[in-house]
Image 1 (cartoon, one colour):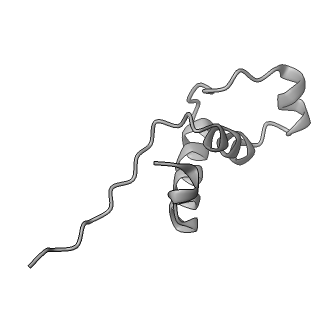
Image 2 (cartoon, helix red, strand yellow):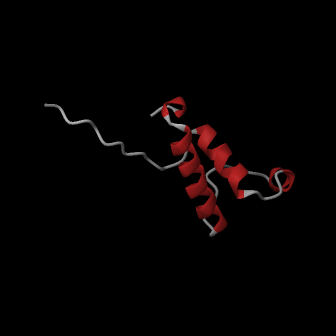
Length: 69
C-alpha cells in the first residue's frame, strides 16, 4: 500500500503503535546519528513518523471487504 492510501486514523494508529514499540526498547529501523537523536530530543513519535514516511515499517492494515451478493 502507498502512504497516501492510508486514512488519517490508520496513520495515527501505525505511528502510535510504532512509537510505543520504540519507547519499550525496540531497535530503530533507520540509521540515526547521535546528533540527529539529540536534535529531535529522542522523541519516539518523531522517530516513528520518520520511519512511516520512509515506508519501512513492517506493519500492515487489514480492511474488511464488502460482501458481494
